[in-house]
Image 1: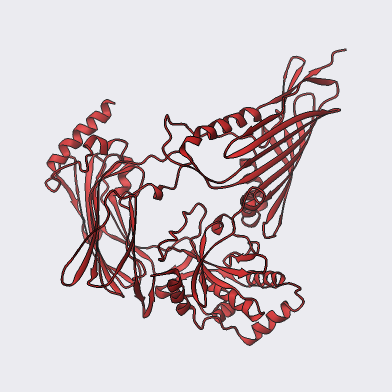
Image 2: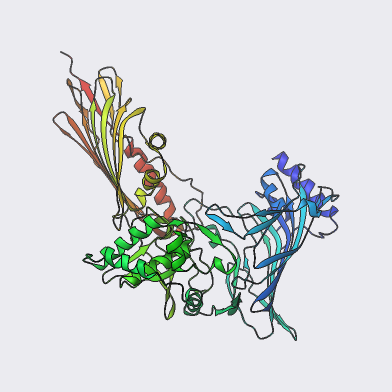
Amino acid sequence: MQKNRTLVKWLCCFALLLPSLKTFANGDKTFAELAKESNAIVRNEETVFTVHAVNSGTTRFKTTITVLNENGDRYATLYVPYDKLSKVTSIEGTSYDRFGKKIKKLKNSDIKDVSAISNISVYEDNRAKIASLEYSVYPYTVEFEYEMTQKNMMFYPRWYPQGAEDVSVEKASLEVQMPAGMPLRYRESNLSQSVAKSSSATQDIYRWEIKGLTPIRREPYGPDFAELVPQVLTAPATFEVEGYQGSMESWKDFGLWINKLNEGRGTLPDETVAKLKQLTANAKTTEEKVRLVYTYMQGKTRYVSIQLGIGGFQPFEASFVDSKGYGDCKALSNYTQAMLSAVGVKSHYALIKAGEGEAGIKVDFPSSQFNHVILCVPMPQDTMWLECTSQTEAAGYNGSFTGDRHALLITPEGGKLVKTTAYGPEENLQVRNVRIKLDETGSGLAKVNTHYTGLQQESRDGIIHRLKPEEQRKWLYERIQAPAFEIEKYTLAQKKDRVPSVTEDLELSLRGCATLSGKRMFVNLNLLSKWTSVPGQKEKRTMEVVRTMAFKDVDTVEIEIPAGYTLEYLPKPMRFNSPFGNYTANVKMDGQRVIYTREMQMGKGRYAPETYSQLVDFYNNIIKADQEKVVLVKNIQ
């Protein structure tokens, strides 16, 4: 407590000493409120985006940040990305110590220019300017300023003035300057004050400002951080990138622009078309044709990302991919679409925001919010989705990477939003059967058969295709939740259906299946599927409860007990119901066997804040139930 008071005192003095900062608190927030639980305070941040025409613009950015401790040091580094369609024209920076004395002014030699190639790309023209003003004595303040010009006018600013949970914001503003009469599209969230508009003879000006934001502390199972903070998304009505003009006024219009980029890029060599027709000649259904073509594509190509200029949005020609055997998500989806078309199957190129745990797009704000392309194949009874960048994915499976979210189908008529496949408890299964032969020491030999489907098979899918046998064994050792054990044997087998599955067979040598106390043996029933985590509970929950995955676990455990033991205690049946899911557990004796069954099913969705205590109680009840034991007693002659 004394340390915190000292820091506050230092910073109050520090604020007075800095000539460029007249006050320290804004928006009814005191300094103490801004500093509390903060690692850094954004003192002032200004973003000015000027649109010159449909194909050019300028961004000017200036920020002053006080770093309070070592956890805030990352805010003392400026990172400015650029590429072929943008140029950084200036960068300046200065740092001050806690007395307001200048520590350092950036020189050109301090600014690094590095490649920003992502870990999924072989080559792209993305680069970044990086400048750091980190200092070892706290608190200290950094000022950064930069200007850049851009020719890619698909992207207008996305303003998140509070970019992390641990930062306070004293003041921040966004200003967008448009040519007079040229409309700006925008979407506001969590703002206390809406846009202020003004105009001059040549410009229409839109300005947003916020003050006095204190750190946000997300609650367990709470909404995504982006839902909680002020934000403004802006986008053009019309735009141009390297001669390709388009509109974002509707999803239909944006899809028509993508059509322009893709036009004429779906032609295949005649010999390839003939090969595909021969490959699918005996297919009895459309789905069989799709699977044959998809498998052919997976075996012939590999994923290589090359992002250069308009090539970041436009696919390679199908003939190029056919001859070279590689391409990025756009090129491989376009190639697969061309191959399906060659055998009479209609499909749609589809833009999507991919990634496990990614927040969904803002469906009410047509704009470029996507980072990936997949292929959609409409079917009479269902729709198949194809992940064309994977050499191992099951045809028709979206999974955690692209499932249960909106995609933009690129149809001849333009863009159309649709939802990808959502997977419920019956698709995300873990069905486990365990047979254990227990000896008199409490150890045992176990044969475990587990069938995983949907999202629950994804981790096993990854180790099947990416790890060598010795690495797979190590991975299993790290994840099997059992008492002391040795893996004697294991096998993993995958089946690639619309909902793929993995069957895992284990032979385990277990120590500590049961504990001995005198003539009694206490037998653990749930050896492999114990629930162990309960989130913390605040005095008052303020945020919605968000569960993002539905699943169902079914366990059957048969334990053969040693000769000479009889039953003394059998747990009663357990049943717990909650808004979030259900749990049952039962135990019975059948001769010399203890048979334990357990089923846990959880849904996904959003729930009122007041239900959170029920979730905590539900998990606590499950943890207690999963610890139940059977008590055996040894017969003494």
